[in-house]
Length: 210
Image 1: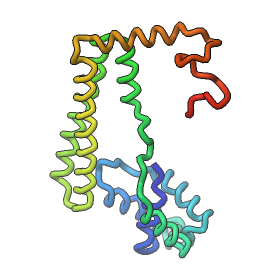
Image 2 (image 1 turned 180 degrees about the vertical axis):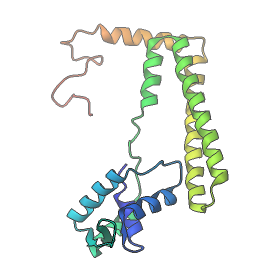
Image 3 (image 1 turned 30 degrees about the vertical axis):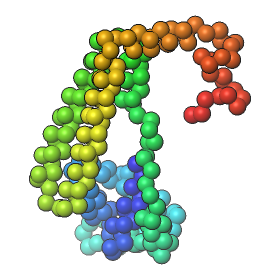
Image 4 (image 1 turned 180 degrees about the horizontal axis):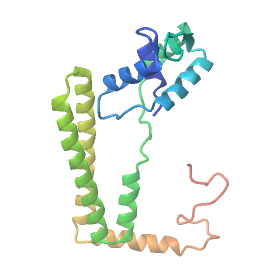
């Protein structure tokens, strides 16, 4: 996830150098985000400088090496305002690794495989939820508390999806899984030269969108 706008927001409060920005970012977003890699941060600052959204000034220090201080420009403030005014779409759309696992497990026709995939994910999500709850109770910053609450609600929604998948895929004594496995087998034996529904063309207007 790009974080250049969050860096611009921090610089809108005043000039700062790299390690100050790292500490301010980590304090602002809370522990659920994880540490910000300082090398990645400097790459972002270099890109912002090239785009003239920030300016860098090298300041000499008596003992330590020179320190580079960054300051937001008027163009940077305009870009920050533009970003804040726009809604935020899901960064990955609805392309999700776990959804693909559910798809693969369901089309295997194996109830045991489906149970294993769903059970593994449920256990992972419950551990994640407990961890987030502990972080939220310990959070002193109210904004960090809000972010942790939002993260917990995302995990709760993911748990609901696991429950829904279990109900749909395992709630009819395997009939749906059998139909899905049969459908998959039928599709795999479709003549490669066919233009029927089981075949995805490799070119032309019928090619599946990526």
